[in-house]
Length: 232
Image 1 (cartoon, rainbow, N blue to C red):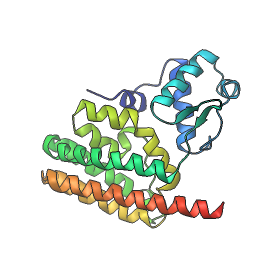
Image 2: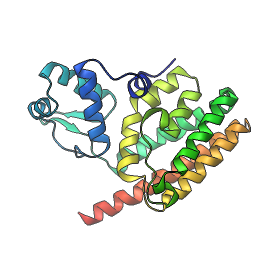
Image 3: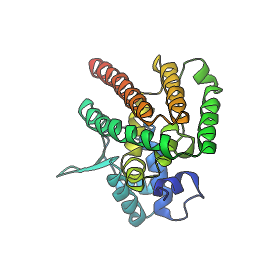
Image 4: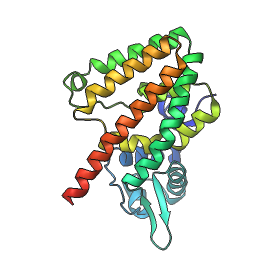
């Protein structure tokens, strides 16, 4: 079973207006082009993305389901705000579920899938910004190391929670706060260790390494959030 977002991210281009505007707004929110906490203007977005209100409202409803947009009583819809409290709650779930995904991947991945995942990391390493420790930006979907491992768990409920419900909110924290600076080389080395554990079919170690990796990423993002707060 494939995630709905896997089809959207890696398959043919979306064909409906709602699909098209969903992808565009998702990317804009994840990358910060639409600022965290900003008010959603249906009129403004409809004009910006050249769609009618009906498909826009459908897209906004789907953005609510993946936690990028929230409706606040008497205040309308807003882009989610990136906070320490939100990060802790999200990464607590992420650490548990991706650890489990790693354990299952070690049991269930075909050798060819593991080799493909190793090649993906080699591709990441050969990007100039990764080699120099400048940033470690991974596109969404099949070129995202974490996404590949989640799919490799072959557990449809786990895939639904991590790839449909939480994926883009996690990416929002990762892209805006976690993919540059000294953390880059450490994150890459941790990915390599996780692949080695999966290749050795050591599910317990793969689970542990993924949990430690996500915990380290959370602490890195926490520090950046604290720095932002001090500058305000």
